[in-house]
Length: 386
Image 1 (cartoon, rainbow, N blue to C red):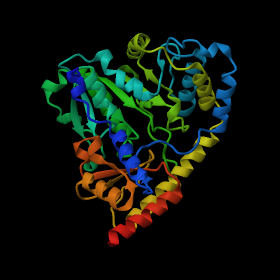
Image 2 (tube, rainbow, N blue to C red):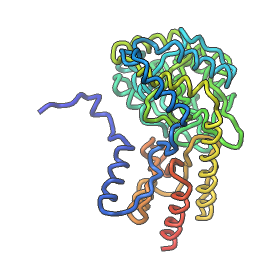
Image 3 (cartoon, rainbow, N blue to C red):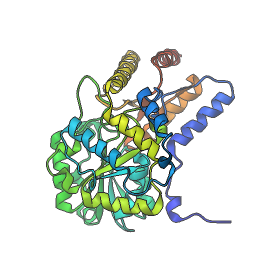
């Protein structure tokens, strides 16, 4: 029959689809499953945002094609949000483009700048879409291990010059999925200078920027001098406001880089539904009490899980941000997760799915109620005793 392209041959099975498949099989057998797998918030979208969406649906104009970089009023609200929260100035007209979720933008971005035979610099373990987007553009991802001894920061000085000569993009993601690490100002400044030296675009994934704990707000990428000279940031309403299914995000930063991404999007999609953009204005511009409440819920869950894992004799790095716990299990993470699923009905994500440096790790997502976390810890303790 029909043979798929060589680019498609390079794509692995989507990690989270495979996890969900295993969950369904167990549930069909009547097993109760507790899933720490996919990082999909279980807390509802704040009511004020839902109400704004309902109101927007009464406006007939929102049902037309939402062409271009996105609604001007939504882009203005993004600009104002950055100024208020990070003291960062963005030109809403030239430096912001609305996306159908940040994943879509990250996946398409290599097509704008990467040619066959060229490299992207991809930290690992990492969100799989960085590699996937590179493959689909015909490029080659050069993997940069993230190791605990290096604060889960890629060692940029270790990259061979023959790779650097053909490298077009450097991906960074902080607060980091899956490791939950946060970047320092010093590291980000070094990365910016590195990209300037080698004429590389710095692609910054900030999806978890507002999910942080103990009052320790992460460093904003564009607060670092020179960031806008070489960088583009991808952000989203998904994690901050529990809007994963709404599919809305944006890219911002260097106006030349943003404009080229906008040109690609004009040719392959018709924009983000305008009613969702109007709801996005409420999300960013309205009272942020719900965001503080959401952080508090995740922090309570984090503390319950971390304390429980410590009681099971695990050496746990306490996350300062994201809603993940990245656990070194001291053995093959795939075998460990398989054992936990088959014997206790608990799903966690094997670290190997994010890259080879994650082989001895697993990731817990804090996107289930605290009662389920406590129940899972009881099951794990029982399993360990056996």
